[in-house]
Amino acid sequence: LAESMAARSDSCFSMGLETLSVPMRLFALNRERLCERLQALQDVPPSSIVLLEGGKQETRYCSDHEPLFRQESYFHWLFGVTEPDCYGALEVKTGKSILFIPRLSKEYAIWLGEIYPPSHFKEKYAIDDVHYTDEISDVLKAKNPEMLMLLNGVNTDSGSTCKEALFEGIAEFRDVLNNKLLHPEIMECRVIKTPMEIEVLRYTNAISSMAHCEVMRACKPGMMEYELESLFQHLCYSRGGCRNISYVCVCGSGTNSSVLHYGHAGAPNDRQIQDTDMCLFDMGGEYYCYASDITCSFPANGKFSEDQKSIYNAVYKANRAVMGAVKPGVIWSDMHCLAERVILTSLKEIGLLKGEVEDMMKVRLGAIFLPHGLGHFIGCDTHDVGGYPEGTEKIEEPGLNKLRTVRCLQAGMCLTIEPGCYFIDALLDKALLNPSQACFINGDILQRFRNFGGVRIEDDIIVTPSGMELLTDVPRTVEEIEAWIQRGEKTWKKQ
View 1 (cartoon, rainbow, N blue to C red):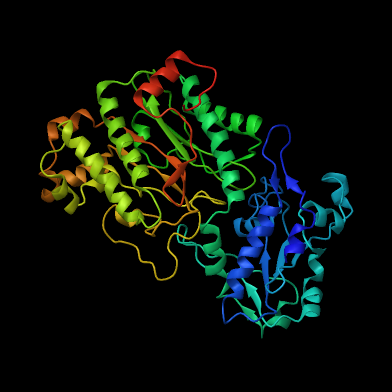
View 2: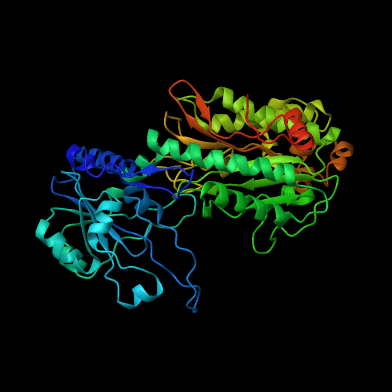
């Protein structure tokens, strides 16, 4: 296995210039880790083979328009292949990797460029063997696996099921097919990032942080929200080689900043930014299928009002309190409650709330102002897999039921920390009609914040053996944000 992994070790992915070079050793190590987990299972015979189907090139509805292809995340994690319509196999005992590529027609060379032979992909991806997809059945029959392991399992964020590999001749393997054992093992591998994966996540965060800083400085009252979305995408691509973004950009200004997933097709970042607005920009670039997820909140005119400062600082204190508490062994739901407690305490200090914070916690008042989970895993997907492995149950209390994981933290996990405080009429009105919650709310002061919008501060972190590493690098304190926007230094770098 080690000899196979060492072969063609210089192969790497890069978008050129000063963009990050990602070695194919990253994926060789991922394959090794998966083999080790599968070898440890008594139910997996030594001659077992893993088979994954990569993403397919789709067209838009009934047209022939082909959207830009992005690889399926499990397939990318295991093989690093950027092309569509491929399959990949992995021998559990030896770690030997096999890539199956489509046999392309001669027309391909006219429209899409050179047709490369299998040897090209063997070198490009440091794969042991490469065959065509119409040879899958013959290649597998020659290896006579005792078990053919297929990927089938539910993504607990989307509720969707992984696409199980299908190929011509699969019926001949029906006696050795297993679609139960692979998913929990490969999912758990993706939860803990290797040092090489962390290096890619550092890079995506560095590029996205830079772009956020430039957007923050470029934002001016009178601009359209989508102008800042466009600038972010341009900077991530032109300076960082991030052809894809991790998710639809959220560029909310004014009351739009309280819409948690603003920016969708029905609300396409199309409001004109006003002088007194608070802006909430949630955007992240993606490099080689590794995501980033950063939110910056700041005043459009570069100067916080007293109310803006109060709400921002409440969220900032929660963000930093969680960072100070994160370490291996900590329960993520406890971190969410810590963030809630800090925000409620701050809202009490400005007079918006009254009474004992612990009593507010008991009636789940925090969920009125923080209606989403504290954060989520991040990796090859923005909401990365592994939040609720088998045997892990969701907490069915308001707010806590929105958590994307409730797991005990381990070194190597990559998560977002994204507390927020929002003034959402639908939730505020509901709380005011609930006597157990309304008794804590000062209605007169609340009225002052009705059109405030919201604040979210979102950073990406890696859990380390002794605490955490902060990957995101943007101005965060009120003083840093105002200085950055108003003075406009050429570059931002946290001292």
